[in-house]
Image (cartoon, rainbow, N blue to C red; front, side):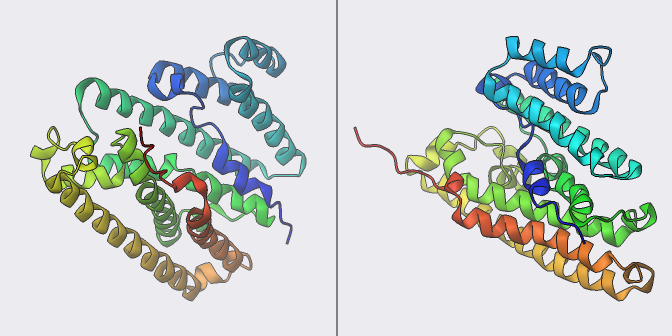
Length: 294
């Protein structure tokens, strides 16, 4: 079994809009994400230009930190192809990467709607997009490359396998949302599972839920968010149990377990959720710094 350890880690980092300008402007975000797809996978509106020409143009428009994912993404993709990544797997990876970057654009659109109209997405819509935007589905496709395997499409489309992929992706997304919530609440950001749960349970609260009030000691708001955080943890725990149960059921089915690579694949998928959980507990990203005293 070959192991290309950096691949899943790289999947986690790429292409989410990398500046405040793109994080608040859907047009800018869509332009950047389309350029990423043009440069890395050579498709899109500007595919008649060479990769070097597109990168040169990007240097005049974007900062060095914004250009870096464009350049490294192209290098990484070429490395994967040189390593013999199967054509069918290349197609699935490109499709997953496209869905991932467009989910970033949808997230920016929602942030704009919240800022301009106070309109939040429905909880089901948010969960569906967040599942992709968190990057786990892209990592799941990359895990085949990391393992040096190429599973048959019939296996990948099996309902149990797809259910496991969704459960792992939701687990990663919801852990991220729950642990990000205190910091996002302090910043007044509400596009988060914990914030959207009270709105889903009580649509009339959509315009009245005030993150600032919770910070300023409003017990009613604190109670709403506290209950929502508990519910989010319950949902995540349920997803964890589903991951365990689905993994067991997959390995108990002869038509799936007969594949010699299936056990490694299931372990790799589940390790994405476990690894994210372990990393999240130690990462400074989720530490909400105490307010500075004046």
